[in-house]
Length: 452
Image 1 (cartoon, one colour):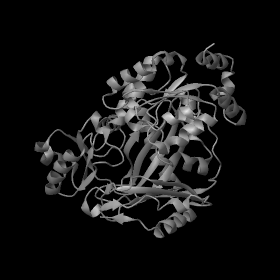
Image 2 (cartoon, one colour; image 1 turned 90 degrees about the vertical axis):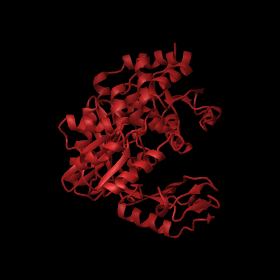
Image 3 (cartoon, one colour; image 1 turned 180 degrees about the vertical axis):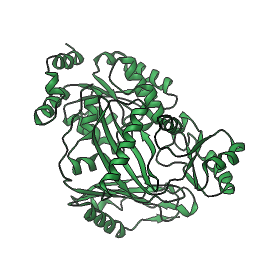
Image 4 (cartoon, one colour; image 1 turned 135 degrees about the vertical axis):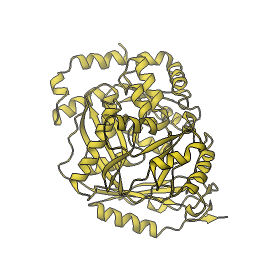
């Protein structure tokens, strides 16, 4: 009997009413079904995502990795953390990438119970691979719509949801007409971008024309392979107000869990993240309005069973969505939610990958507070070394101290261009206020070793 047959046999013998319920008995039943399942992970991503795969292993899931040839994740096979590693092209054109994934899987495909990705670039290809294999997953059209900021905005507008004004920029000749429709201030952004790459605030027509040339020249696959999916640009209405990350869990078309993190003001004109904290002290009604808008946008895109990560603002005119990502939140956000709410979104994502319902039971009140600071380069140059966070390794309140750049790698300060994020630091404390104070004190005490 294959692993897939084993999982399906156990599933067929399971009481469906209990499986779809909530509470300890239902949670335990779903965990039992996870144990021994076999799930393919498309493109394991950065080594900082290892905690996801360690968690999957702790839940008893056998992983099959499909990704780029030189990935660090090959080590997990040697360490017993995965069954095998299969090389494939997973980014770029999603149809070609899906074909590469399916070819790499070969005979392994028949042994799979699910397929998933935690890597933004691979979301459309993974959706196609899951559909081709007859396994649970987001509809390919939904995955494509979330990957494209243009299609997300169009779906939001067509569903009658409050949507920022926008224009798809075909070429520089249409900038005056686009500016007249959108107004100033405005934001130039890539249709297929990520992590604010290429986002730029402009305040008048002259800066729009200069900014268009600058951004168009910047967003190349050499900067980030994600731009292999397209280098189109948008001009979008600038939104005032506070920015939030909204994570939602859809099961059978219903939002069964959500969590909101409040972002620190971004560094304009580039919109690079500076920090975040959870839980937010923002009015509960406004947090609910933002969450409802994100859920409505996800449903308008056709998602029904997914863990999704959205970015939104509560503006002077009410909530507005910035983007919707068709995958689990990146970085340490999932660990923040686990500490604050008690809900493990990694576990929930794995359940959905198997076609199992999700029905988490969060804490009635926040169990902790967490805060993150993204360290930007304070000057352009290079880092002499990357050991400046090593002394925090023994601090139990520090749940993330990650260096983003390599020693000797050029970094850019905001005064000289799109700023470099050189490190991320996250702490936990009894409350968000205490966590924010703690992480700021740690950052203030750092000495960043620059060299020319």
